[in-house]
Image 1 (tube, rainbow, N blue to C red):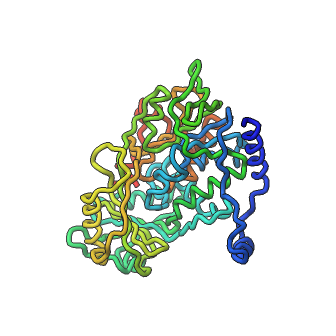
Image 2 (tube, one colour):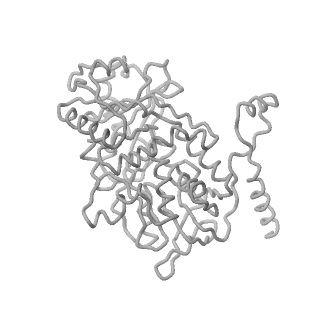
Image 3 (cartoon, rainbow, N blue to C red):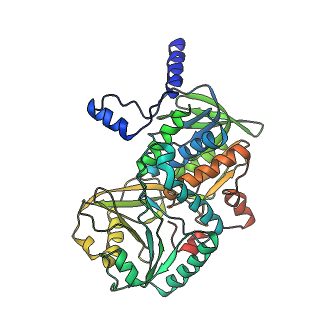
Length: 432
């Protein structure tokens, strides 16, 4: 039996070297033979006894970390472990907004790195992630928001992030369906980032998974971590439902379950887990080709390629681990957006869902080494995780490979003990 498993493993490793590239020619060829020749996008091997690096969490951030470990640092003896299915957590449960117009310098740096990587991701991964730089506007509906966004636009200019504050007339030009003179909160302008947009969330995870598998990394699904092994203050491996696996370095990238894994490793995190809900409407004809965020009433809106209106709002008011929506939250979000987009009132809700977000006190992420030697943590992205995936993976990989990264240095765990908060909740008015 062991010989058979080893043979399967060898065949799997050999197939890595011959993974076919996707191309227009390949699509035409497979269409001619009824798409019978497509191979699996990534391998699903059994875990080996040991790896140089184990990443816990096969969402966007975990897969991006593994990918850049291989691409940028040549570390390919890597396993990405997932207790469920690949991309089944927050990566597959978000509203796909991509922007980088943050006030604080460390935030703008990592989000702008992510946004720029999104622009070339399809070519880099040889996988269409459907990046759509349709533009993101954040509505100013109070005088305080106008002042805040003017300040952010000036900060972005210093950071090299291209944004501008636009007039109500320009808002109406970019989004004709908007109602500028709302009954409670009229639109007074907007912070506009032309190169922001959306991408297909599932495709991002699938593209990274395929590229990681192509480099010889193992993606192991349905494999839950039940314990973290350590000796003399150093991580030595993990216990899983598929057996014990040894490693030299461990990356914990599990979003809302970060506190659970940290407890297994013997340290605590300053994070809370809260459900964030979203919904989509029935599909309609194209009517909106930008992303709108209305922070005063706390709702955001875009239209998917299938015609659905993708709608999101705030988090639940209590800590929980649920991944289902609630009627009252959908009602609150839609009620707020209907004032600014009256046409929404005529649409039916198609489906609703929730994701488990991990919130820090300053609404900024944690990318850091931990009290356990060789163990690194990437968490605390709150409601803004999807837009940061490639920048997060780039910085986390550099941190794990070299011990530090310019993208992550400001986001260490020690900032909470030292009082070096990166308070984006105050700066942006919303943690998205």
